[in-house]
Length: 569
Image (cartoon, rainbow, N blue to C red; front, side):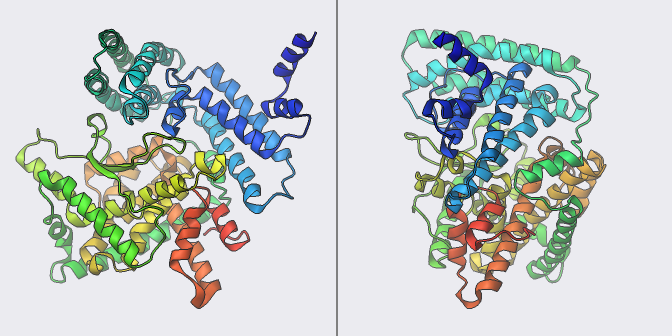
């Protein structure tokens, strides 16, 4: 009878209620929070590996539609339990943690119920397969043989994953099929070359034999998937609609009308365009239309690219410290490395910090994509010009100092933060901060107020403005992919090739509006606090307070820094 009752409870009560029943008390915020993340890590082993949770390293995510539906039902139960909590007596930061967790759950429900990537996005299967392996070889969190066994275990599950895709994919938009085919092409080299190379030094012949076998079966599965995609008829629409875009904004606790948000983006585009013209005149007063060409002439050699980046990292760190722009939890810098081969088609430069729960492999990496040695002389020269020193310096500010790398430093320096503050990251806050620091460093006179750096900072700002307008335009206002491409090229100084790729990214990553939206919210908060505090305002204190809140929605940061809610824009 006791066992029968236990099975009945498990079938009818949500996980938070089970916790409450076991404790004979009302569910607490921390109990619900812990149950949520334990369930998430179990359901998404690849994400758990990246976060530094290694209990599930031999498993691959179950992305069958019935399983996803069950997970959505769990999320709804957790959300109901959270909203039923009376948190009025808790400290403000804990009250905010409840709001953050509800927003995290809402974003996951948008994926499960609206976007449905495993039904509409062929690339989601390719990304899961490769990223599940990459997370095991990227960091030395365990001895090579241990990680090798996990890779073998996951590779054994990839053929079933790709076979599942053939059953589940429907209503695929043509542009999503195009993206998947490109990414799939790079996966063959990754699985066939990069993964075996990562474990070449392992002397265990049994493991090597097993890896060789799973490599071949994985490559064969990828080839079958490629054939399937080549025969797939894609007739779906990529646009999510205004309601879903509003729902996405709500997960960042932004509740402004869409037209108000789009108007703010248009105004920022006009401002950055005017500033760009002024910067061109500063760089080349006689021939401002040649300013960009002039800047591109100043670039490092291919052999000296990473050395230049390391020097720029130190230059930026020295400036942040000497101007007291913020508190650095550590004076360490990321390792500067070549971007892994299988990611070079998509990444120019990127910073990767360790997962928030990683205890062993805690180094951060700053990846820079080297010049392809197979390029012809002219193409190689153009690639080097793309890495002109001012552009590279602005990238370093964004990716590392004081951008993303510093966010990672704060994350590592605050293990006492709540689970949700350590495990979650607002897209708008994360990218908004990095984008904001580009402008802030210019305002503070970085690089001796070099107008060339300002010009490249503005070129990147214009790109983010066009991303913002393309996201809302394509998903909520009827803008076509061709229209977005034209805007990228003619309004934001992108080449025809780059313009198409940037516009195309917005079809599958509609939240790339986050760069500009996050920056605008940070600037608005800074202006409000400066106006309120007057002569007592401290830029360093503002930055420390923002970073000290974690990568949480800007509404939460504003509330905790000012003591009240107020308009975000």
